[in-house]
Length: 333
Ligand SMILES: Nc1nc2c(c(=O)[nH]1)N[C@H]1C(S)=C(S)[C@@H](COP(=O)(O)O)O[C@H]1N2
Ligand SMILES: [Mo]
Image 1 (cartoon, protein in one colour):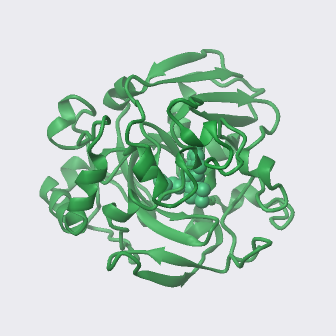
Image 2 (cartoon, rainbow, N blue to C red):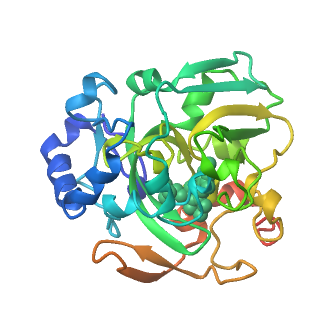
């Protein structure tokens, strides 16, 4: 069965693509940074190969892979070494290399995720078990940070909407609130305001229900075919590709369905700069810088970046613009 999906986040099932296409492509793409990668991945956290040798321990081998019939025209992946070494995860410091340096001892096993609030069947799931049964997909998404840098990242995950439906949302569920782990012992930024950039922890985020149920919205448990490194939000984080990166809350422990728009971390810190919606929009500048273009972090030397125009809804307008048809996006930034 071929899953129909726009080519910008193309997927196809295992049987439609020989595994070797995926594997060899991944080797080529990750070859450059292999040294740094293995170094950063060393630590207490396992990096399981979600579609490969360790599959028996993690996901069943139902890998979705690049669709060779519909290669995206702009598919230049950010090398794995950069995806895992240039991060924002203020719980581990505000510098771009702080998370990779300081998050390695984060204990991600066991890890539970609680879903509560406006649901008929609240519950707590074991995230590692969930990975093994839910059916993982690879999604190649653009990632646009509000700071005007961007990456193309091959995530591994599943649709948030598909997951939420298990808990039977009630008709009063209008928004979804997310919360990161709060553990100052493990997270230096939560112990010290200076290290943590003044964020009021735990980090919280939110989506409107229709955004949460949109098929582009995923909970990610991996990237480049492996479980997430801690600095990228292990073991489970949100990815909403048409929104600024800060909406993609990391290391989630709680999801609460609610009636009212929930508070969000960056909005609490600087409401005039960061709105609840945070849709990528080249026409609405940040008060302190332009959002019209971005520095794409791609292959090449460590600082090789390409200046490129920023696209409305980060290139996903066709899929999501209709969610906001009645809204003034300058007001609801
Ligand atoms: N808990 C938590 N989640 C977070 C952040 C953070 O500081 N804490 N930073 C956000 C920001 S600003 C961005 S751009 C992305 C970065 O994700 P990446 O490091 O995997 O590229 O994570 C987001 N999720
Ligand atoms: Mo960001």
